[in-house]
Amino acid sequence: MIKYYNKKGNIGKEWMFALALIFGISIIYLLFNTIFNTHLAPAFIDALPDTTVGQDAEDGILFWLYMWKFIPYLLLGGILIYMLLLSIRKEPVERQW
Image 1 (tube, one colour):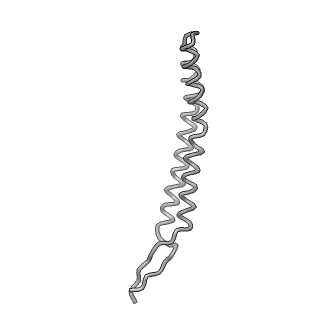
Image 2 (cartoon, rainbow, N blue to C red):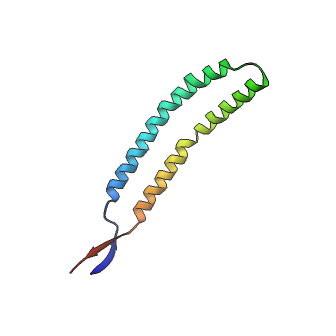
Image 3 (cartoon, rainbow, N blue to C red):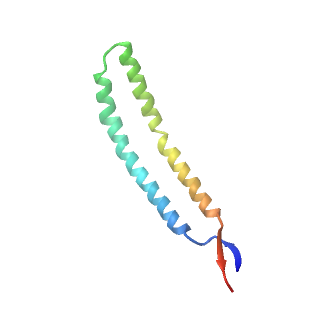
């Protein structure tokens, strides 16, 4: 039994899965970004009282909206690193002669 390494295999299926995941994350981010920034955040901020507790709550809402902007970049970066590793990975293939 001869064992050698080859780059062929399920890389195509895994790349298609990763590309579909990137597309899905992009669509979900666009939908939720619109909901959060145009509907939910202004409604919650307008409903807060004008006290220090209300100001602290507003600061918390704005902080998480700021962090929300970076989540897709982290996810897409992780997926792209995964795709790069798939490209350079070598899979063992066993053949009998």
